[in-house]
Image (cartoon, rainbow, N blue to C red):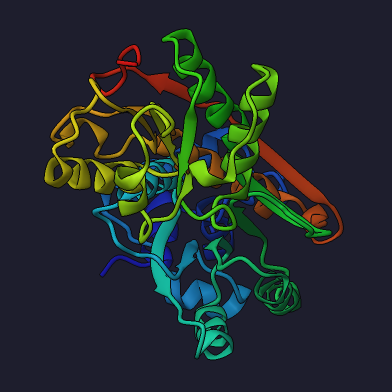
Length: 333
């Protein structure tokens, strides 16, 4: 195995000089570009590999980013998000480690993750200040910055990346309206996707359409739609997620209600919407871009001598857009 000593002897410099160059500190030691180039060329020629564990023992840091989440199902949107994270991390020469957690063992899971000394954390937490606050407090001990997936809600500090869910839901209602729909309902649990629910209600208000609580259907309440009189039930439904909308499509087949002839649908996410029996019009979230933004913001904070995210909120909002397919048509009645 090639060592720094081997490189130093080949180039004719000290091991300290080689260490400074290979660890990106040549400017601190005023090492010339000529010497730097010679060391880097020799390291490549000799097929030198840095000893990451040894370096981390000295510095207390690694080149690892912990992806800390309760949802590691890569078949969902997480797969596209994680692809964006890993490809961008590779550009910055970071290594991404998956780290799961559960509510029951949250504190133990945080400790196990931090004991690996990641240089930064990307976190997708359950809603609730207690999780955010605990993780932030523990990470602050090691000056380890965190980027959170989702909006800041009531947080007083941290870096947050999320899509513009309010605007996306608003656009969905506007799209229905332009097709002639005036009875527009909502699929989902309002408290689970609050910003989308707000966007839906804002869209109704903008079009001067009255909000009707009877037009809000949770996933265990879909059958109620089919018992409503045809001339008074919604002609269009906005799903807070693609899953809500796609599950509703399954119900329509059993009830012999045709999409979009008898009811129009729009989902949110656009991960598997095109695979729906009726290709689903959906609000597209650019998850790969999302993932890249997470790493870009985290890298900036890692490189700051003073971690500003422990004292203020930094927020990045990513735009969404509607992807048109075949699930929306003018109302039949």
